[in-house]
Amino acid sequence: MPSMSVDPQGLSRLRFVEWRIRRILGALDFVDLTTGFPVNRTLCVDIPGVGLMRKPSGRYIIQKAAGLEHHGQAFRAPPQDPPLQALPFRGTVEDPSRRYLARSFTLLLPRDPDPAHPDVEHSLFQPARVSLFPAPAASVPGIRWSLVRVSLDRSVDGRSVPLSGALLRITDSSGAVLLASGMTDARGEGLVVVPAIPFARSSEGGTNGTGDGHGDDTEEPVLVYETPARMQVVWDAEAVGFPDPDRLEKEHESFLRSEHALTLKAGRTERIRKTVSTT
Image 1 (cartoon, helix red, strand yellow):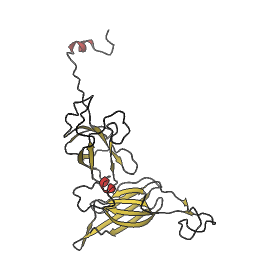
Image 2 (cartoon, one colour):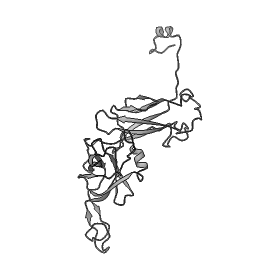
Image 3 (spheres, one colour):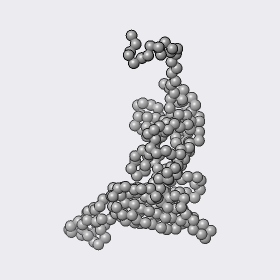
Image 4 (cartoon, helix red, strand yellow):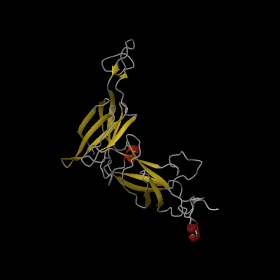
């Protein structure tokens, strides 16, 4: 006996049901670099050779890709060829609201479909993540955040031009620990947001006038309100189109153009303007 929610007349007109089952190739999330939160605003995403479908949450479903045509139909047993992450697709993303800087990125397919590996970074069950860098004019909440605003140019044939597409790395004073990153826009302007800078910290030792903790250990430690740091400028002169900050970060030692010592303080904005040698 049919349920009360089923129209018997509708059932009588039903002739067949068509099932369409298709394997997706993965998902793509764009996230705010500073907070790590998903960006659900409308973006302009272009990945030649890849078909995407945007969901209301802002996540993009990878429906098809050149070279993986057979994967879409092989629901239960995806092909073993090509090998995992063997096909790189270069994409670009732009924010029409200009809150985030335009950038390029590389999507590696196919992703691992094995349900025994759901937590690995390149798993089909984990979305690929692309970080979006804040534009210089972006609003920045957070009273404890330290800001570094940068204006960079370079000399070309005796004249200064903006240094655009440079990766800005804020590290600890030794340069070993990455604290935050940013990028310069077409005008050479950049913003780096350094979260969770403490209002004060212990010098962890005696005082010798420098606050570095290398004084007389018999003296009481003092509170210091600034954190020493370094800014590194990473730039690829051969790059074409929108910059790929992931590549610059991975190869930053090869493209390091400048280093600058600075101090950070919670709630304070540091301003740096300089000409960077790119030769």
